[in-house]
Length: 428
Ligand SMILES: Cc1ncc(COP(=O)(O)O)c(C=O)c1O
Image (cartoon, rainbow, N blue to C red; front, top):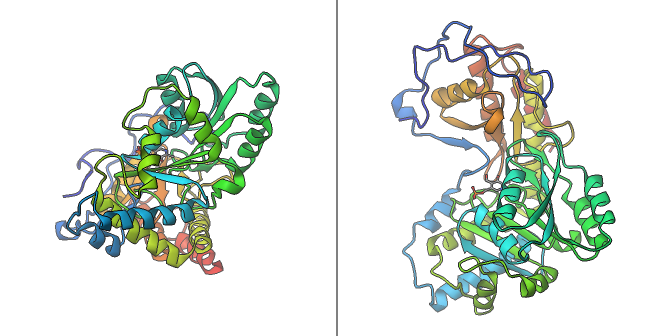
């Protein structure tokens, strides 16, 4: 069975007004187009799911096999070896000499841990908000009673580093304790300029940079120590090429100093406990042991590919996907030049994006992501994060083109998008 098959016999394709700008999405109109015929893949071919969403991402066979091993005792010497090895691998991935701690939980656990371990009640923080995950930072910070000053940008636009610089320079009393932001804003497919913002925070002198790198780590260069990022949170189901279940928090020395002062409530997410256990190659609570097996295998694969090659692959896929969508007349949602290497958000004009996404799933068992919140129906998103090869990009583009053709919605000859993607992929 498909996971989200569309009801038949209804007019599910609607002609929506052309989106006048990415800022103002008009309300969806009543269906006006007649029902369109689309062939579903036969049931026996609906067990061939290809994930092209920004998480969970596809998992390599080697990693799945590692996952399927018998669990071992989490206080055993064998498990300690795995913790030691994965800790070194995680430091390599984060390009840091400092601790990278592993929590059994999803990416949001890492975000929350970043806040509760470094801040205190009533602390003033600057939160970047240009999408769903920026909004989440604001919610987490407010849930812990922080004094949040939001620095906003329109969805689809990047955060403006200058806005951070001026707020930090104006803070002569050094009241701002942290700048909190999302590096790759998954909801809009925008990459924020973490490097420049972290440099402004360093110039401030006392504030910390706390970054959600959930869909940037393992996709693009995030040299934690070089950029002076104090806390980085990420999750296993993204660039790590693993199933969901582990989250990671990297903490630099300034973050640990702040930990000493922090009075926010914490128990399971108290990173002091994780740090103490890590010194003994252990974990304070029963960890997801099989996910550690998978982590070791996935990071080994990543080490073999090499960081530069991994980043180049993601950049190539972002270029190829963007070029293909533009070539077939589907505008991108993210502002030009600010597309995330993990995900491309597409805002088709005059086509219900949600229906198109569902038809691609029904016909080809390729799962694209939908738009979130007010972007539902207006945007679909193509994930190219983690275990994604050139052929996956070509297949996804071809499937989108074939679906448009089948629905009579193609604006250019079918194959135009594949040709554009192939040209970009050939550039390397
Ligand atoms: C940028 C970003 N931050 C945070 C999260 C939350 O992660 P999780 O759903 O693993 O808690 C996600 C998930 O998609 C994300 O893309």
